[in-house]
Amino acid sequence: MNENLPIDDTAARIERGLLRAVTRRLPRVKGAGFLANKLRELHIRKKRGMVEAGVLGFRFVLDLSEAFDSALFFYPQLVDYREVAFLEAMLREGDRFVDLGAHIGFYSLVASRRVGRTGRVLSVEAAPDTFARLLRHTLLNSISNVTLLNVGVSDRTETLPLGLDTSGNRGGNSFLSRGDTSIDVPCRPLLDLLREQAFERVDLMKLDIEGFEYRVLRRFLEDAPRDLYPHAIIIEYQPRWVEAAGGDSLAVLKDCGYRIHRKGSLNYLLVR
Image 1: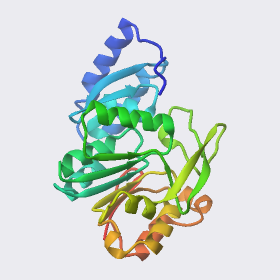
Image 2: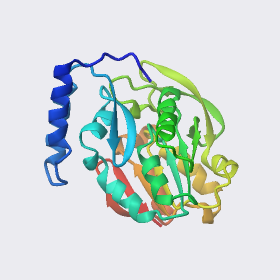
Image 3: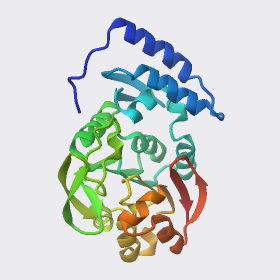
């Protein structure tokens, strides 16, 4: 994480506060997301620094030059709200949640609150810099039921180059696209990780690993016992990834008995 970002002046802080007063009050109606994003872009037209802010009852240190961070800062009530509602409906005290591509911990923290002290969250993030922020947010919020792993997930034990997205969307880091900058990351099969962490079941799994979902799921669904199949899944899916990934992750899930419950903006919500 870059702690040496510029410090905003008074005018920038006032502008940010005024915009935030509007965006955080926007209801979940058609067009609200478009307006919120335009107001967000108005503020981040210049390089911005780090700010600590409340997000759905949690504390986050957000990099306003990053798309997802700035969305959480300005309009958290609109960020993946269908997915958040699904997560909260599916999880209860004592459940098990697996977060692949955990990024800075938004889903993991929301899940940790739902599963409670007797539940468990496994949070996996491949990029070391992003993982450091994930760790920081669990510590900042005194989260004790989340296990963090700084590793990639693949269909075999291997080391792969992780392409880093430096355009302001670090959530777009991908093993499918090396880009201009990449780092080597050790990777493990999902089933191995679950067994090592003694996960006897998975009530809900989220996969946001930028097109690598197919490789991970194909191997997992072939090797795992049925009682380890997640009851419900949130998965990012874009048709343009299918060819590069070598297959269709949604098709694999449907073949294993999953059905689409709902579609979000980029994510599919499935149950089995």
